[in-house]
Length: 365
Image 1: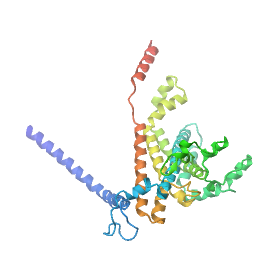
Image 2: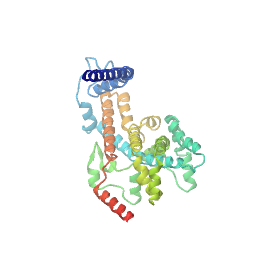
Image 3: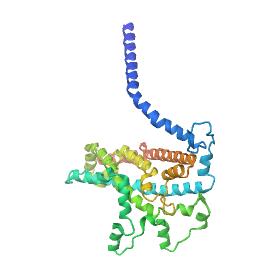
Image 4: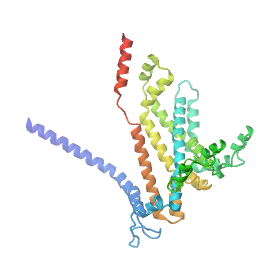
């Protein structure tokens, strides 16, 4: 009996070893490809960010010297033009993320709930129509946006019908919050905001809001990405069971209460995916800026991704360009971990448990 059991365990462990070997064998090509085309370039870029490579020859040649964090200090701490440009890019992109991510998520969820309704006729048409901008080339969309938002474009023509003078969108560097404050007579900030700052930018400039030019990019991002995230929410909605929603309806919950208390908590994994993809995409915005304004006007559409490209390929400061890319990577990781912590599953508080038990006892009595 004991020998039979030992042989059976030995056979099972041998089978597991065989399955593990087969698994590694099948995944080896993918691991090799990722290592050669992803891991190795990332490690080389990390070396470039800590070296004085000038873009000529191999970055691993003996003539290239290790400079440590010198490139990072030039971007973050020196207070020169490189620091101020990075601060400007970070300010612009922060407002971009702050406005695009919540709006595109809310619109995508609203569209998903709308096209998921069984009473809606032509749901297939609406799903395709909402998703179509997402499959169109971002370069083509940017060129179209430049035409629509030009000084004599369609957007300003529509505004003129309502008696409004539209701005010269992609050539107006004024911040929308500063414009709003100037409308009530506040043209300069207090000394506490104008005297201090971060990365060469005063707090008053940080609070300028997105420029009018960047606002046009914000509208474009919401227009082009909401359809993609709509499909993710739609897939999540169609995987939800109807029994919980029906139970809430029988308990007297109205439509908003069922959505907020029942549907939305079940969409938490999908919401995390949408927010993560939105954050990554917004912090890495590049092709629209490169195709459109290239940081103009007055660097109010400059973003860290485009600044990294410009610093390396145009200004030939390869180490600083790579350093900006890795700083951007750290920012994305921090925001992803932060939102994961915010959306984590929390245990039900004792206060809610007691309130539920009291309500249940009152309902049964």
